[in-house]
Image 1 (cartoon, rainbow, N blue to C red):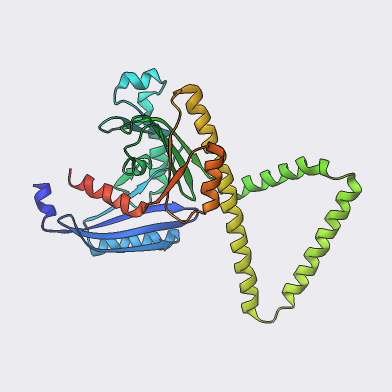
Image 2: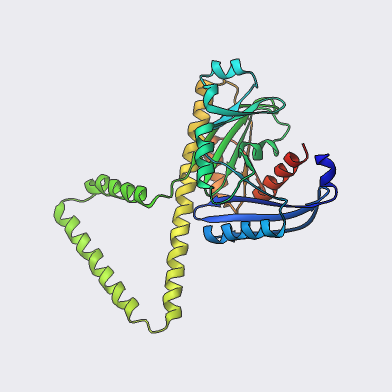
Length: 318
């Protein structure tokens, strides 16, 4: 009966994922599994909440879906509970999704915390990002898959093109206090680069002098558009620095994951490498991964929002 209803009504599917302080959103209207319209947006949190409310007012058959990038999740090459016990995973603390050849687990605590964060609106389906890779895996043995976003990175290694042997996830940190701690630690480490404390004082005084000059220059600008242009350039520089930092952390994470795989999981050498990404990535970044892993990396752009809505569509028709 439930499936029959879907043939006659329109359903609104909302997929989203949070990137830093923004919500990337796709609104898809379907009827009988056919897409009637599809739009994408980027919202601040308050705008997103208002958008969700409006969608429910327009259509009560609205379903909201997203992915959870919590650290406490992964893949096990079996659905057997005994396999989970064998690898030391407490079954009481996780939720398991059993697939055809393997399973994905997510910590119950993390799911509950995530739902609390989303308490301002109802989330119908929460998917693991490992599913995004599973939908794009190739028929190649001994392959490493890297899912790269500006919020997290996933490594998934398949040995037989059917079920993953190794999984790992890394979350980028955006907390400003953490950045300040990191900067202070870097300054402390760099003190040896100065010949003596006088050199350090001179450099600080020079920096302060430059800051004063820069402040005077900015204050003397009469045209407000010039000031906005300077602010825009500063934001661009900060974004570029953040991207470079993320890329460096990603390469280290990939190297450590491969090392862990060889040391603890398998002695079968990796033959193929794939990187899936949602936004643009540089050719240099891919080459750097190749140089560090000694693998040829093929890249493929994916539409995360569309995949989330595709997964939700399948769930609605179970």
